[in-house]
Length: 463
Image: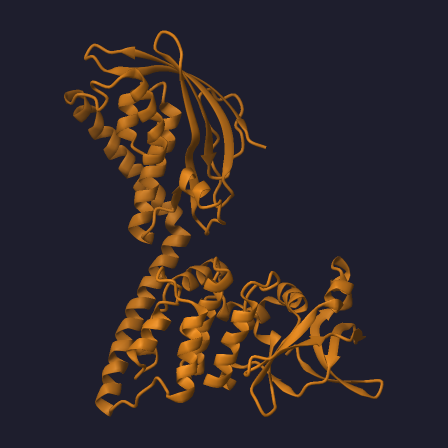
């Protein structure tokens, strides 16, 4: 555990054994790590520095050390409402700290004394240890307390709910954590198998609702201040009431049922996540077959959706299909041979999104316009960006138009020698932007509707 007492040159220090050989630190600025500071937080609100005083090697292991303090490294079994409340105060003090990456258990030390105190070891040092240490240590000290994809206060709210359960002496809500990274990330992004009132029998409805809304944090905006208020109330009165034998038996049966149901759903999601590509292709093939068999007969009997619209409006609708994924409207706007590549993209994304919606509850697709408006946030695993932005259409002569826009694809690389085409995306990669210029020519068909007869396209990746 990265905290122990060290005797050096006749003086006692508090040491941080890294568990890492000195050569591991050659790639980092050791001086910067040594100059970083820890902090002592008091329950009264007082905060004081804990500076590192030196670094040494012991049997090839690098050890940082600082002023001696008597304490006990964090363990879930040592959590009390008083210590939980103090941890929340530390969260509030550190929520805007740029070096904060999450809750790493060995970085917290409960200190003795007349009042409750916590030593938060230097963040830069503990971050480096966490990133560089063995996987089994991260499985013990990092993964059980942090949710992938969350940051800032929302990440701390998630951790607060986990610590709250452990403080109330319940099992970890997500135990056992999956070993596979993909399975574990999916597990932590979803609510636990058991709701709080079954995980902690007798838990007050208000406390159960707060935990449920924080695992993971919902859109109601649960804050650390709300959690601190809850923890402070637990210091006065436990949120758990005693249950009668009959109530205990009823909760036990409900928990067993919900656990069986949750495990089945979790196993199904894991299976589909790993084998989903294979079955997705099968479903996609079936869907495309049924689509292409039924559409020609139906469309031959119906007037096109563009009937009565001007050429300019037809062009605008055509580009709108990249966001709406409306392949039927796209076919009515342009001849199939002309729009073949665009139609293939839109149809594949539409059908794949429906398949994923069926077994994941989400399409896995976000429009480029929405993604840009939200400030280009980091994408969750399996989520892709697609669509066009910055569309500018100019009217030329003889029912011809010039369209300029940016095309966003799911992590693409250019494919050469393909006319009117865009590169295919690669899985789980950053979106790629292409600047595109189209020259479109429209003709009026016998039924009176206008339709795109040709598209001359040029595109280049945005650097």
